[in-house]
Length: 415
Image (cartoon, rainbow, N blue to C red; front, side):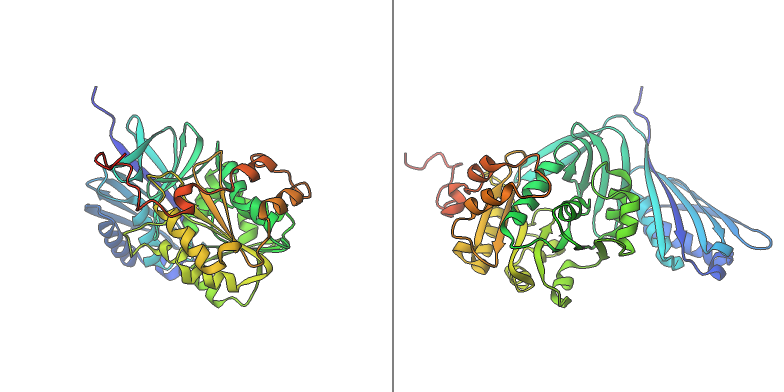
């Protein structure tokens, strides 16, 4: 039997639209047609029905399937669905472009994967190397203005992918986030004000509040991704918690925008600044996230630290064949914080390493962290005193920057 057809069905609700626009059939027809074409769809025909006293329904027949719009001018709202088969058209992009064309101030969407058999994600993990993830239920898939976002069931539980790179998974997310945040709490003089850049899931914000922070500014550039995480991930923000953070009710204040601009413009100082982003992308100068790994940005973050504050960044993978970004981060942190102001931790339950820049260097950072560990309000699950002893020594290739001097792939080097 041939494989079932594969498609994506996007169900969306648009709000905050001018009622006059929602009652103008020709404006709606033109906007729907143009945005579908811009998203790669082939429009065969569009039919429309105007209702009395107000409202309209439009149906577009596509070579790929269909799209529809139903409007309620009295509520400033429209419900949209776009279903496309094949890989050419992007229904999520079509909805986003339509929302922009109609001037919607709010967009809520759900992406349903339909048809097909086994699905996979091929994740690049090094030059010439990939990792394949078999997917179960696809809970969300969309192309945002910044990235491709996928949330699906895998062998590691519900898993978040951005641009085909695994960002977090139910089975390992706590190990990752504790390794990222707990050492920063142990090294910082206080944990009252925290700035989080990236970290769409919201776990770091929760850890910060649990550690005593009374104000957490969470800055993320991609509202679609943050909201999808709250809706579909079993960890991090819940929809209610996210809504409160967006309204700035409670200790967490969520801001949608560029983290670099936030650091440059804010006059606030923070006890801990967390930069939690996908891995740096060497050789891709246009990649926006690279700006948040640069030495000048680290310096700006250092300037925003309170006395005794700590900056922590996800810094890459320590494996010799994947350590390019870690080596670069190691050099930058030392340039900004000095040799005595940098602490390394490689998670023994995960595959990533983290660098901590201390505004006030500790004579013995490991001893200081061990001493303060028992006083934490919440006991870590994946980090204890032995972790702090064993995982705070960087690999020798990082400490001595010997990667370029030793080529393990050459077979003609002298023994």
